[in-house]
Amino acid sequence: MTGATIAYRKEVPVRHETDVLVVGGGPSGIGAAIAAARGGARTLLVERYGFLGGNLTAGLVGPCMTAYTLDGSQQLIGGIFEEFVRRMEAMGGALHPSGIPGGSPYSGFIAYGHERVTPFEPEAAKTAAIRMCREAGVEVLFHSFVADALTSQEADGRRRVEAVVLAGKGGLAAVRAGVTVDCSADGDVAAMAGARFEIGREGDGLMQPMTLFFRVSGVDDAVVEEYVQTHTEDYRPFASLVAKAQQQGRFPAPRRGVGLYKTLQPGVWRINTTRILKRDGTSTADLTAAEIEGREQMMALLEFFRADLPGFANCRLLDTATQIGVRETRRILGEYTLTLGDLKNGRRFEDVIALCGYPVDIHDPTGSGGGVTPDLQVANAYEIPFRVMVPQDVDGLLVAGRAVSATHEALAAIRVMPPCFAMGQAAGSAAAMAVARGAQPRTVPIAELHARLKADGAILSTG
Image (cartoon, rainbow, N blue to C red; front, top):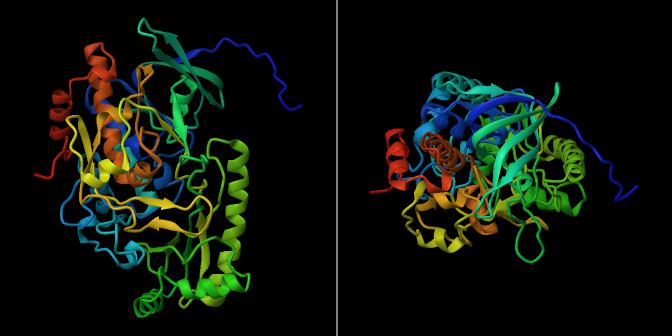
């Protein structure tokens, strides 16, 4: 019955007590957990899957977008992200971005915004991430899903996160922590704790579309590269072939070309071409529908690839992402909200904790348009302040990754993986400092945070 409720009450055992709890093992969670543990805090990282990586692995998203300035001339993101890339590179599972120019097959043949991307293998990412966490002393708990956040009322009117309730094979269990870092990507803990947030774009609340990544093998690399390089009139690779197939009703996704990225394995390409519109990544029903629709689009795309695309006649499906790729959901209301103007003007912040050079990348919530274009200009490098990770109305909590406080347009630039690593590193470092001081994360001295981040290899200025 719609609207019906069931009264439910249960005593939940406290299974863990820790200094810093990091929720979500994606790029921001990896950065946060390692930084917190290296900062001397007892750190627990909880993750819903049986491996780390988030969109790096479960989402099959790749390559990592730029950790450099927009023009590719200067590295902006170092620290834990740089260590992570070097670890994968040493395994033969990544190429360092310094050697990857925009417009190359590894960059999806896209030049603008795609200078110095990082090609990598998902299995290398899983291994590098767990090894770095364990070496730092992070306790990791897999197969754990956040069910609730328990709060208390502070004297200043804010709520304080006291514990997080997890659901797993053993039932419900609580974790008490001095500071919780929400790296769930959807701001789950923040929302459950009562933090205010926005969702979607202004006006209609629509979010960027979802994409199911998949990989194909058996591709003739040379044929693909030759075709794309000799058809420069196409807006995106194979755009003219896609347009013809759409007129014939043979192309299932609202796209104007084929998003494809060469991998380290000969004949294997990542495909970023499915597009599922008007779904909400915080809705279980919508996620279910998106997963089903994404796989149906994928099967139709495979038929199109084999029949129409040069070099793909003998391609085979290698694998699909464990989960649909979600670009946007909640954005907390933080102590500062990052805007498109900040990115465009390269605004300087006294509490800067990360640099970025990736452009605005908004996929049209209603159709085939958008993506990385120069239409919404950004500076060659811009700054991300600490305050975007601090909820206005909840203590004991930091938020890192794509749920930070930013407008729809600004988030579309900083949501990619390298800046998420950088934000996570800053949040984890600040959380460890807050615990050591017996203070709230919002009161951490920025000068001390800067010193710690710089000592750990983070880049905070272009000078």
